[in-house]
Length: 248
Image (tube, rainbow, N blue to C red; front, side, top):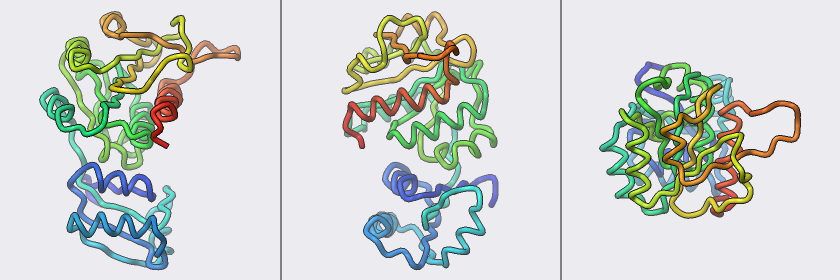
């Protein structure tokens, strides 16, 4: 596989990729799979004019040993980092209420990859991060994301506080996470136009980012540790929003 391409594996991820972005170049399907979920994927691929190869499942097993392909794999052109105009255009064309993830200074590529993977699974429409003091879409990020870097738009902005202020003006509710917050994640309404704002490793949310948030929430901690890894906290928070929004 060349560096210009990536593979998305699994029924949900492939279906999401087919629905949400162009750039798909080839679909591989286990020749023995003929169920309804595969048929839906085949229909989407046919409408998009994507070449199809039906091959033995063992060939998929050999080719994608590190991932659970579930009998389907989609080859995509690697998505590039986007910018502020892309975010503005994205919000205008959304048919559903915005559901965004903001990462304020995540610097570990493994954490960013895991956050992208959770964002894809939760149906987040875009991940936004500052251009400075945060990791970009490196090869490590793409590998950890397991295809999510090609399905979820990753937008880096020059001034995060300004972007957050603009989002608020567009009616997006900004919910930040902080250990000292007074309210629990499970006590707030996460429906409607929403952006979950997560801080970076160690220091959490920066002051200007915190000031732009409409509300700060915390994850209940019953043990001896004070906080969770940002990618773990991200997954928990996103899926509480998914539960409330009925996206399950």
